[in-house]
Image (cartoon, rainbow, N blue to C red; front, side):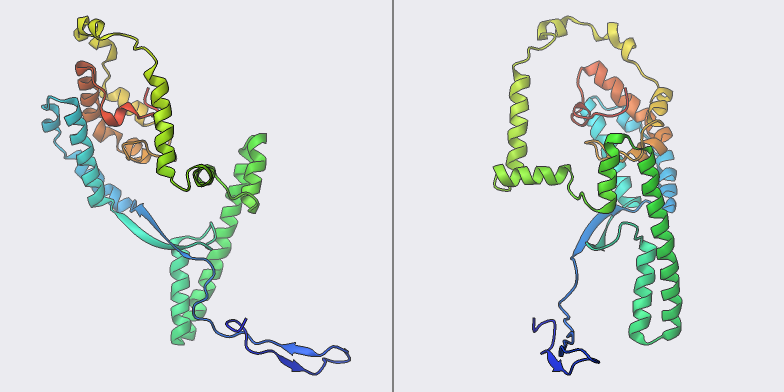
Length: 298
């Protein structure tokens, strides 16, 4: 362990002990750092950016979308416009994190630690004491808030989930569904997760391929869509009511739009969504993004 400790030194016994003392001094290892750096990406969603996005959404003219003939073109126009605004006002940024970071650590706490360490390296004792005390107070507050939140979740969880939450809380359970799938891919597909996903997709496709259609093409061609159109008409206020009830904490669907956007920006997107829905009913075509979309909009 020469990289970590200097050569041990044998010293006389301490006090009346009959054992010799051994002194091992730790050496400085610049390459040592516990854990590893992790690069995470997320969108900037501060309040100022959201306000700017709302102002732009309120002024968008969707007339070009309303005059499109193809339902698929209308869908692409809608999502291209929204994604362009996202990239401009809520851009995706990269942040460096560390694998050993505690779950309660925030960006503000990281900033205080950086200032404390800079003051320590530059020998500024006043700033060092200031940021050291501030970081200690904030750490205590964040830890308390985190553990209180975890305990409140335990009180509200069912008996089945209670033990699982306890194990995760105390660090006894680290695996999740993603880890299980990775382990399955490693065992059966030599770590080729794409091949495993392709085989699963082919299996479900083969099963669905044997199911006869509910209506054949002749019946569909004989139907007059105008006779059934009124049954499927929705209005903007209905869409807004459904979007306002979406859970903001659930993951986004295949379209990639976060649920908080659909919920908070509903008044500005209900009209183009209604136009796309009506075109889908009229043309008898479901947009590709919507065909596999399982959302809370009934």
